[in-house]
Every structure is written in structure tokens, then in C-alpha cells.
Image (cartoon, rainbow, N blue to C red; front, side, top):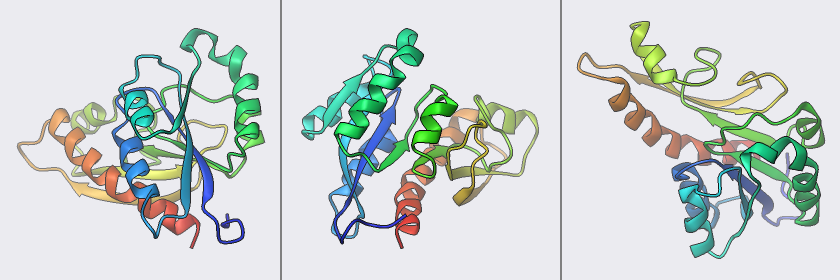
Length: 191
């Protein structure tokens, strides 16, 4: 993927919750070295905490209700086209995009996942890591394809699990690393 004539790439972030990775990406996007300009934050949850932060930063926000999401996916695609969105960053987005949606943005949707993919796809990753007595865990930024957490890996960060770690402690450590590697992954895409 390339920048467009030296300009920053118009980007949307999809969230479902508090939006800590979204906040991090917004902060990154206003730095000189960032290749992205965040023009839209979309959520499938009207109570997502991240929406408030995006509004404070004067970024357009859209929310389509969870129950109607599949029906409204075409409406969202139309909005993305109108806003000239060229990259979509999933950041704690808890809905599975349809294959039709992914096809329309093929190679232009990235996600951050709290495990060392291909291990521990899906939910409850930290508890599953603990249950299996893993020595390491981490996080992965990857391209989104039609199979859950199976797209090409862009970047990963490995973290050693300590004896006194719990799933909650690991979640906090991994989140800190997510905040570091998501911007790195974006820089890598556009380098």
C-alpha cells in the first residue's frame, strides 16, 4: 500500500469498546511521521467509550446498532466510499465483517489481536494462554481476510509470562505492547 501523492492515507478505525488502541492511533496519526489521517471512527456499540474521545478530537463518528449490523453493512460501505476511506484499522472491533465487505476492502483492513497468531484465534486469549501453561504470549497486527484471525501477519511482539502472572496481568502487559506495535505496523505497511 502506498501514500497518495505524499499525502496521508485517509483512514477509519472500527471499535466496540473503550478504544484504547483507537486513542493511541489517533495520537499517532497527528505526528509528522504518521502516514495516516483518521477521518472516521465507526462503532457497532453506541455506548463504546472510544466514541466520546473521537468526538473530542473532532473526528467523525458513526454507530450502527449491533443487531442490525449485517443489514446495515452496505450503508457503511457507502459511507466509507463517500469519506474516501483507503485503510480500515480494527481496534477492539467485536463483529465479524462479511466476506463481501472484506472483498471491497481487500488488503486494506488490518487488525490487532492479543495473541501470537496463529495461536489463540478468537476470544478469551489470555485465559487460554494461562490454561495451556504457555511460556510466552504477545500480540499480532495482521491483514484481515475472510477467515477469523488468519490474515497475513504484519508484525508481532512476544512477551515472556512470569510465574506470578494471571490472565488479567497478561492482558495489561499485552495491551501496552499493542499500543507500541500498531503504529509500527502502519509505518511498515507504508514504508
